[in-house]
Amino acid sequence: MENGSNGVKSLVEDIAKALVDTPANVVVNEVAGEHATVFELKVDESDLGKVIGKQGRTARSIRTLLGAVGTKLNRRFSLEILE
Image 1 (spheres, rainbow, N blue to C red):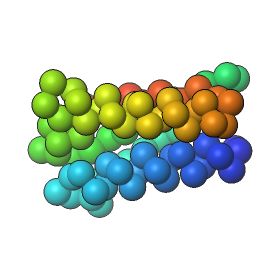
Image 2: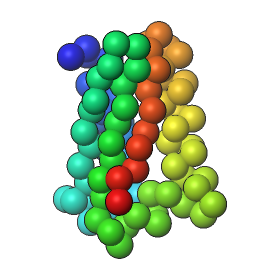
Image 3: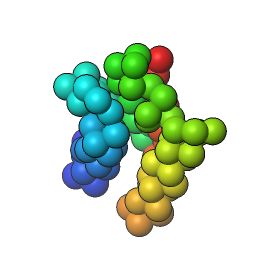
């Protein structure tokens, strides 16, 4: 596992924990492929709306951050929010 993607995983985790009411239930799984890494975010059912945001704005913002970081690290990152 690369140092860069490990830092990105903790970034996603920290952002999610800051948004939710029960940060202990935040789980981020990293699925690394050859050219892309997918982060699977699982939060408490009651916190799902907080992570997604109105009309998906919060989730889109997190994905935008991942895109910017991916450009810097020359790697593609994506976020999946699991229910």
